[in-house]
Picture 1 (tube, rainbow, N blue to C red):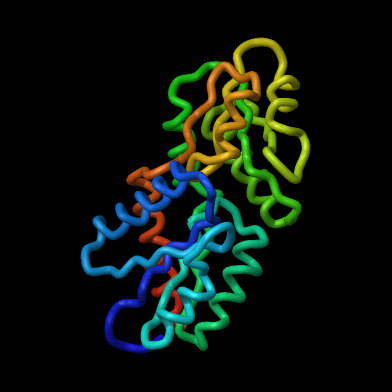
Picture 2 (picture 1 turned 90 degrees about the horizontal axis):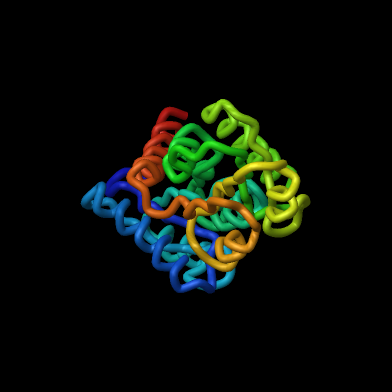
Length: 228
């Protein structure tokens, strides 16, 4: 990494056709900027709509260093392949931080969204055919179950079984809460309302703990690089 101005933080999301979802992700980036004045925060996506990450890395790394922070909750295909390939285009001037989840910070926010609900819990994830992403969701379930002190099962909105609705139905008698393991609203979050649960939590959204986590990912990645 070159000396001079701090590397640009490229906050890379999946991308969504949902106007509400885009607004929330843009709001998270804006909150990161506000939390650290002077740090340049660039938007990028890996899918659906631009600006696409590869193009942003090409532009930024023409004369600046950059840290790509995935605004994603697991280390699946988009992190391991799409982001890794885009970072490789930086010619040594770009590096990628880990995804935001799973972890204790995300678990904190999930518990806050759930509140004092007393019943069975299903963690609802987007779903993926990628084994690493599947393992990350399993870890998110384990962490949430440990924090709540009660069993938590998983349900998926695509690519995996059981579906969220099937997971709710299989949870047994009594009220069931669906905990949304999604960053922002969109097509997936809209489906959760039809899953038959007594409670459906909001996506993680713009939360101060997530703002701090984005900056922690940026700082830790820089420290690792400079110490290597």
